[in-house]
Image 1: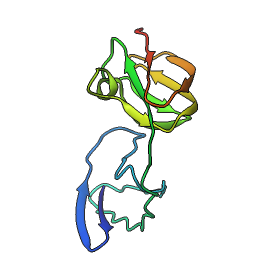
Image 2: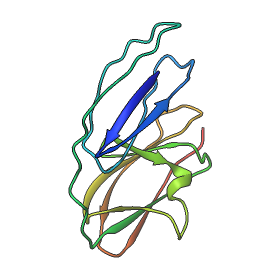
Image 3: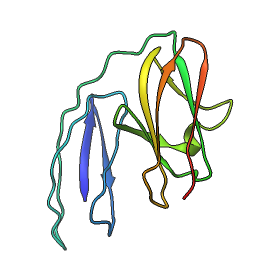
Image 4: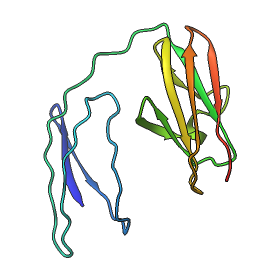
Length: 135
């Protein structure tokens, strides 16, 4: 799949090659979510053009969410939205900054299984850790 993405006056090209039957591509986290179904045909190029609306600049204070687990590539979801993988939020220098409040955090292991789902109450200027499990 090839798609051109325009942000302001700048353009770039993103090419993704995969044999996976079901996959997602995530670009620019500070923009509203846009979903476009694409049909890929062998030997053909598909171009997707999508205007993205910028989200407002986040303002603190923030709570810090850290994740830990035996699988560094386990997927991390917050309130059902994919945020990254465990290894991106797993130490004192890393973490996902979110406004204080209630969140549902789910860690889904690459090895399969239901994973771990936990409700957390993030407090301003405090760190909350959610631990995933292995197989």
